Image 1 (tube, rainbow, N blue to C red):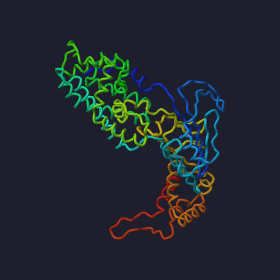
Image 2: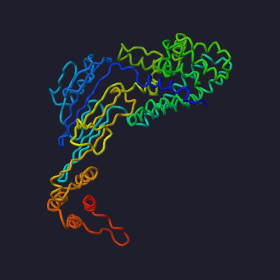
Image 3: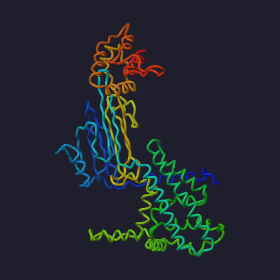
Image 4: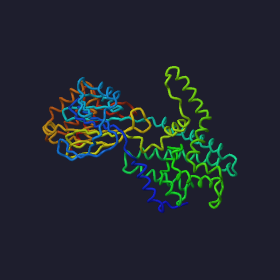
Amino acid sequence: MHSLHKCLPVLLSAMAFLVAGCRGPHNNFSVELTPRGNIIERKLVFYHESGVKPVFYQDARGKLMIGTTNIQAFEPGELAAITALYPANNLINVGNRYTIQGEFSNELPNDVGGAGAYNHLTNSLGEAGFYMERFRGNDDLIVLSERRIKAADQLTDIIVGWSQTELGREPGYDKLRQFLNVDFRHDLKNLGAYWWEGQLADGYKNNATEEFAVRSGQYLLERGYFTTGDISGWFEWGMLSLFVNVSGNAPQTLMQRIQRPMARKMGLAETETVPALLSCLADGTRMGKSFDEYLAGTDLYRARIEQWEKDKKLKPDAKKPEPLEVWNDAVKDFNLFNAPFGKTHDLAVRLSLESPPVHSNGRWDKALKQVVWKTHIEDRTSAAHLPVCCYASWTQANEAFQKKHLGKVALIGDELTEYCLWRSGLDMQRGGEWDTFLSRLQPGAGLMERIDAFRFSGESDQAGTNDQQPIPGISVYPRELLKTALR
């Protein structure tokens, strides 16, 4: 087993390449939310930018910001879909920067893509608000896992079949085939699961993607896919580019470095000459041609051609699929090698509140009095990644009422949230009885006793008979909550 610390600097440099990448054309969405009782105001600012060209400017508050000048027209279909969710004639376009706003209650609009809800509960002791929203993605973990495993099997089957065509007559190939069909297949699935864990953790922990990429490197290193001597060459070109680009454009130096690990799996010593047929890996053009020829003869490609011929009857201009599309589709479904780059669009969500939330996965900006989420989302139609989820709950005590009738602000935070949920579940009759009871309370001697004595109409002090334990009455919870808060 090799020690990772010897090659850690190289691995970390590689992770910077894999995780950061280059920004291409993408959309930018900014959602601003302001609760107003039972409704929530929603303003969406969005635009499309091609590439990244930094420009410094000041916003309305005088804060220095970084923007871009290469704003382009938004895709018409998506623009129309967003506009249809808001009041008519509400869209503002300034230099292809679009702003639209509206008021919503309960269900939030599917403008960016996803689903969301807002709920507001109010009563004499205070109020509680709840916001949660999913942005794009796919939250069916079973389907995603099954798709990734199936894709790993397809990728392995293709590699095994192609290697048989190219290397099947070479001495030692039976060892290589056994390795590819068993160990490589297993390790590819593990690698996919590892990277998927990293994607999930990235939403909750800084540098998670980088950490899991390094762990994946350690996994491959321990299983002999490369040595500490190989590692700088592998990551110099980006190890994963082998799977992203297997055509004649693949970097020749990278392909040369694949020869030796494959030779090892065939049982050849480091000093032995690489078999002649294995040298095809060093010739990108030859490898691309060989790979295309193999793919063209697979059942997967034949099925694609049959579908294309059926589609031509309705769409005569339909383009004939290329053999490499079979491989590319499996890579896409595997969702490993494009994982760092899959979420290409920018999303910022800002929720304005009077005070910090009780619970949230966002960041509280004290100066702006906002809960802030900043992240990236994938294409609307991709659904290959886990969704981006934002949530927050908050409370606002009715301080004047609580002080007048309880002697102090007794219920705040979680306790006020729980009370609001309980109070919202009462029917009209019981709700009226409880509110009347609270309005007649006075702080001072005997307050705890009066609270403890309250019962709803028809509520018994004891429920159950014989050996049965008494069932608590409906007033037990609020009485105990208030007494605890007042102690």
